[in-house]
Image (cartoon, rainbow, N blue to C red; front, side, top):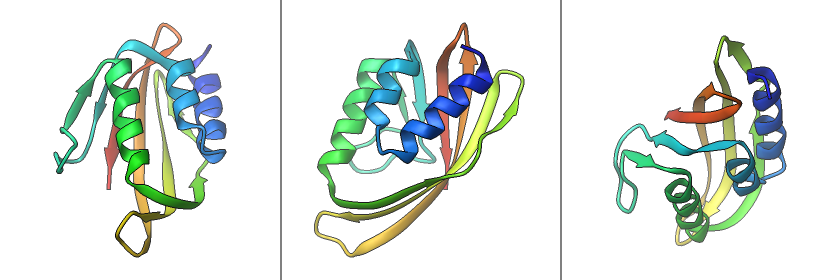
Length: 119
């Protein structure tokens, strides 16, 4: 897949809330995920697709209800693409909230090898 195809597929799956499907299908085994900062229960960097999948499971276990995922159209340059993600969610034990981030991805050999999030 080209970077544009991967970007479009990832954006479509994220819009459907199919984040795990996206990771299983589009990520390289040695992918890295970088958060803006470490937080309770989440390291700043997560290495490897299996660890990224587990990080997703951990995040999902903290979510009580998802109201919507809004994903912008991807912006593509070479082997890198980005889009914005707005999540309207209710975390367990908290009030409903909207979380927004800029998601940046790098592609190599037809797979996502890095993701980094900016809030």
